Length: 211
Image (cartoon, rainbow, N blue to C red; front, side):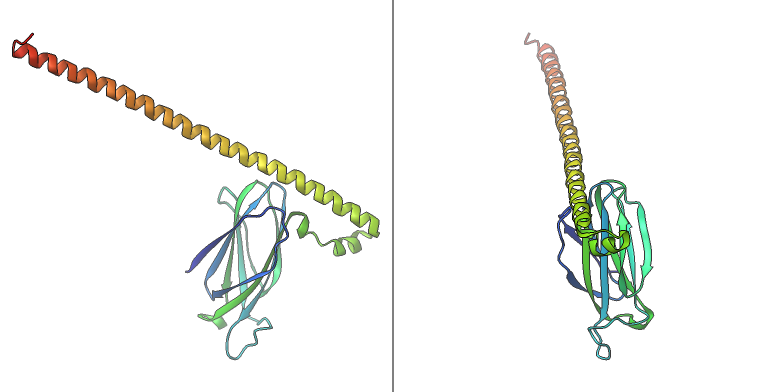
């Protein structure tokens, strides 16, 4: 199975739609950094590139397996969807999440697929038009709701940056301690070797009656 991994270095930024090609049975993975309690919404559309199928329409019998793993490599989402749809996930732990898309379908084994893919995170993942109709909000209330979500997104991003800083500081301190221990160990070994050499030289001189 072909495995590809693409690193997406963004937090709450708006992501433009992209597309990629994938053989049926293949897998494409993305690494997404998410702060705690952050919404992730992905939408996709599978387009089989065959001579008897149109590129602009989806086909029955073709599905998409979506799998998400948290920073501890624990599977938090594993579900098969249709050839066109969307999925949502809210992070519980901050860090790098692995998102994998796996195309499958018996009718299109060995065929090449075009995947239109869009990924939104944080405040950008919220559809305020749908939210306004669902909660029956007026325009001012919707704008206020949007500002509150943006402020919360900024706070989460700052918390995540502090979390990453703590991880980096912990890693740096661990490396510094290991370097210190290695230096101390080298010094002790050199001292012991010097003492051993001095004793050997003293024994040699005494055996030759030079001292």
